[in-house]
Image (cartoon, rainbow, N blue to C red):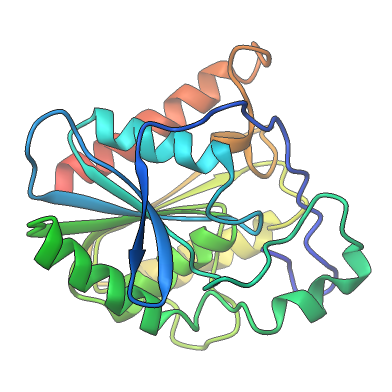
Length: 245
């Protein structure tokens, strides 16, 4: 997400040519991409999009990865039909675009998804993983929803609220050390305040030298020097969910 002084300079990175293994469904007023594991599971992960929207192949790839590890994965359209940001859009218009798409204004959509997961998928343990915009949304869910048993916020911080640190669910925060979107001083402040105020388990992990989007927008097969960090971050993500789900 953008910091307070300039628009979000999010490079879309390596867009995957990937179709996905799941299906699209209608959940009340929103659409969602759902992929199920090979064996029946009562564990589900809400995968939250970045600014490029719920149909970005990279995000669906991450949902499929979670399903291959035993989770029902659902990637809802948290923009509720509004157009996602496009790489060709004018960054000077970003704040105007962002105004009605705040990651802290998604309760209606979250409630619909939780109801669907519990009633239609038999989910008894629900977690959240989000990227960029979705990382901030995952942070928000950890503050607001005790039903969320574990969260992984990937390069995202809630900024427009004051009560940012009293998490209700264990949360892993993953950041890039060379992130033009989220400066390290913001990460350091987050970690210090969590240490002071948070009563549930959390971890803040920084990957030196990496840039914003590296976990889901960089292809490890064409970025060999980044491959160890990409794989380590994805392993950390899975280990965190496995621990608390």
